Length: 366
Image: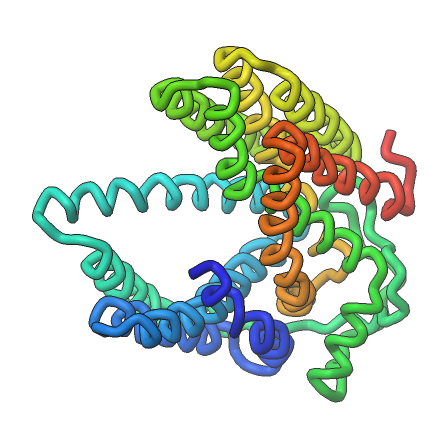
């Protein structure tokens, strides 16, 4: 199912997002949501497995494109508050993650299952599609920056002004726009850092649960640890939203280093402990610190190519193979070396983010 969700997206999402710079945002958003609606209802209605996987394959890029255009518009509407906007979006995403089991529970109460959940999701997406299609405020015509040399000129303090950019222009082709984006060293580096933070979300939960079982944790203790991770995530994102708003002098680079160090410490503690209680504490700390790494890194990615959110997300889409391969690699490590080794391997995520903060900065962070 996961492979089906990402398979078509790997081929079409990046060029679609690059092409989206040439159309009005509200129509691209409404169109993406309309495709999402069709795929959700197809998954709800079809009786055969292969059609279900086809529906998932279509759902993947439709979901990615609709999310990318919404996120890009919100972030670039207030470039001086990129970190704060990303923190709020991450909080909304966490709330959405919690809404899924709640929806399934309500449907189960009425004797309904996953097909009804797909139908309900399609209905909600239909409302969004109409709302976006009718919202003329989303008639955004992109302003293209002519800085194609791939050099990061963004200030380390989020919200700093962008310097050294020529008047707006449009790349001649979609392929040319993608080549320019992929040749922008800072954007590529921060996009890879964002991909690494994905290891600390669903992938961590899966292998963390396996490791908790391996050290003898009961189902209740595993549930408590997962709840602690969720609570920690909400606390970390809330703190980030407050800090980025009330203390603009705080440097993004400093926050990245601090969150990376705290995340690495929590991963290390989880890998070596044999106590379910200490493991639950590590889940809490890791949720608090790791939840901030993606919004901070994604804010830097947007800042590395200002006013081009579609291309920023196109580069992120080009890294989908990493999202698909990483769990397999970790599974091999876990099967051959144990769950503790798989947890320890997750240290690559905070290390990669810290390296990006160190190498992809043009000004001193202090």
